[in-house]
Structure formats: C-alpha cells, structure tokens
Length: 83
Image (cartoon, rainbow, N blue to C red; front, side):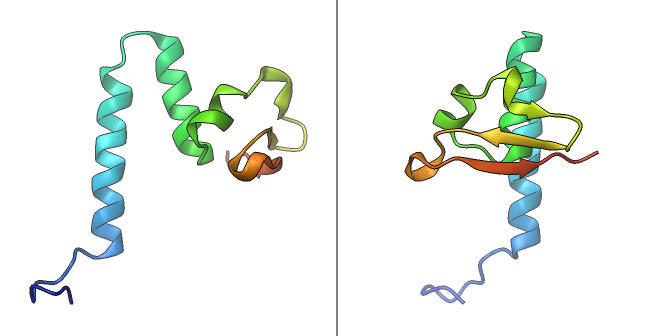
C-alpha cells in the first residue's frame, strides 16, 4: 500500500509498461544504427556510459557473452547473451 491508500501497480504491470515504452522508442527510431543501439542497450541492461563504450570486439559469440567495460562504478563485467 502507498501512503494515499492506493495500491501501486504490481511489478509485472510495471515491467509491461516499461517494455511497451521501450518498444515504442526502438520502433520510432528511423536509423537502423539507432535501433540496434537501443535494442542492445535495453536487452543487455546497460547504462548509457557502458553502452557508449561497447565495441564489436567486446562481443564473444563463441562463449555467448559480452564484456561490458566501464560500467557502474567504472567496473568491468561479463553479461551473458541470450539466444
């Protein structure tokens, strides 16, 4: 319950709303490069700075993971790729 007595939306409803807005953002992008950027950023859960530092050489398709450099706290991490 919130302070005003109304219930906040469930996490699944919030997630659906965020996904819908993200899909709209990606769909309204006219340039394929921007679509790819937004899709990659969202699907890997990257912040803006981590996404801007992402390079093709950071993607390891053989091991199905991405090396994210300079993420939160300037730390590197490995993110699994989904099929």
